[in-house]
Length: 126
Image (cartoon, rainbow, N blue to C red):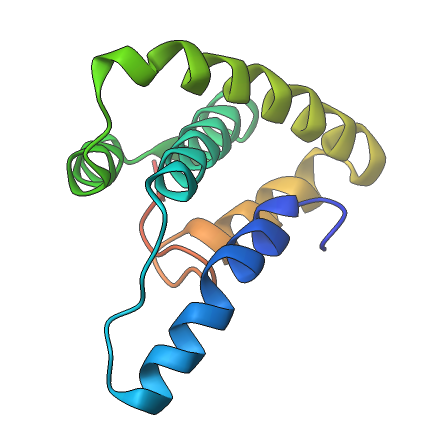
């Protein structure tokens, strides 16, 4: 699954150390703004790719908008976000070819659907 969804590796690398330390010390985790922008780009790429390639899934635009607002993404950061989208699209295209549409879509729902293991509600059932 990690090869198909490098987002897990990204999220774990960015969030897990600070979250576990913060939880054990009763502190809020400190997350760099660039990590938030990267996570936002990854969320868009994942949800839009799933919507285009999985007949049963659609992007949750409300969740994406909330993520953008919470991360305080600025319009000036759009070129960077667009570059990240292109990178992730090719990565997901390769993953789709590797495991097949049905498996990729099942994994997308398991990781980002209503009961998502990574981000809940990023994609929804049509």
